[in-house]
Image 1: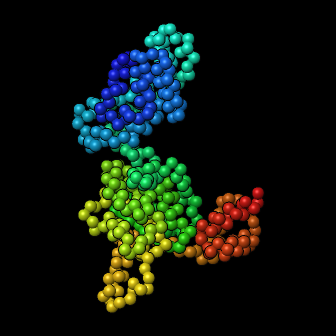
Image 2: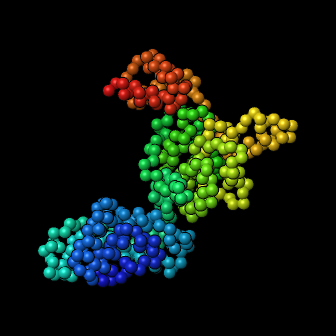
Image 3: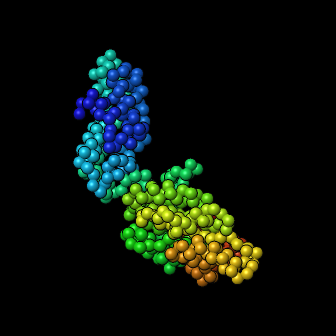
Length: 400
């Protein structure tokens, strides 16, 4: 494809039009347009393109990522795309492939023809290699790639949060914890794994409430499960209890995504008069709008019934007491699976200590190790996996 044709086609994307505004594509267009301006405009545009390509190392990899993260006319009709959509997509891919195939040397050579009086200066410009070719060249091949690998915003990462503007934001530095890092609580972990596998395989699965004492690994278990199955398309979106109003947006995003998405609410607790309490109940079960089949809710809490209550709320006649209790339990009853994380007893706690000491190479006699671990737990408000990990970290620092 000659430079003039490429310049025109780079300004007229159709199916993949969402990519046109991306900085790297804008940089390519600016360089091509600069051939009809002057050498100074070319130099500025070429430098900006170099910066973009150096930042992402390979233009082909970057553009492939942009294609995968795009929601477009092809993804909207992925089950049965019309021939005209497939043809338009093929044309867009031809343009993108031609841009990726350009090296810095190709552009400098063209610039020497366009600006013959500045050939020596142009030869001093930095260069970059052509990018890796895309793994597809036609609309039909891209459609199959989308079906096999997924697409849209959820393709950008595995962990997400909801930002201040109630929009989705990828978490770049997610907790890398794995199931092998978590000691003890084998039964509880197996329950979460079994339910999550059923969800991934599109079999019936339950919303999960993990409740129990602080520091027992409730949140870590959820994050570890996501890391374990991220390569199977499992995603997680963490929201706070006061972001319940974001559920319609999350349902909409999940419904048009091929991925399986966990909505994660950590340390969930409400006051009984909190409007978010009723909204969450309706979202889980009872509202007019159902959850998409690829969306599920996992929550952790230190409270079994998720609602703060006082003794005064239990006063009154039997009818009122029953109404109060039913209101308090109505939210937790909507979780199909409740998993309890209790404080470990002495033997369980010391077993966790032994496993962590072996894993991190802490060389202390067992009797001394256990004595120090128990003393540490007393100072740290009791035994828990978190206390055990903190104790091991403390002992390792003492050996430096």
